[in-house]
Image (cartoon, rainbow, N blue to C red):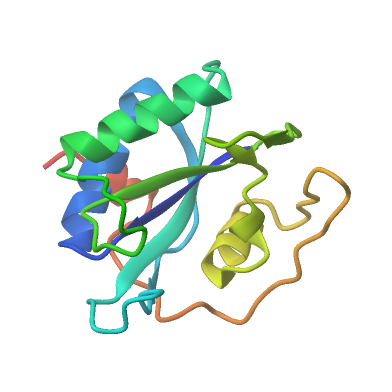
Length: 161
């Protein structure tokens, strides 16, 4: 499974739908986890995030897929800065690429936050209930990461405004 973590805390439903519709053109979405409202990490004064995970189908190698994710973010108004906890219109992170293991400075696969952030584990397990990560690790089902946000399923993504 090739999985992308998705998040936003600036007009989240609008930006997530826009970004995933753009992504779907070049890396078709196969499945979509629920999206949850989650508290911001590192910045409690910020608005809550909306987070989920999508599975995509692509022949792009991981680095090119990551480049595509950055272009979609930018098209949705994301400006990357030194502040890793800054509010964002859209955050797309490649978290799993089949059984590939990478530990480079710009891309770590599988993403080490999978076991630390409940929405990542919950999202991946919603897409693949028997998921075994590279190295044989089975994520434990976490408690629900937060309230489910309606209007962000495959039907909403595939319907054009």
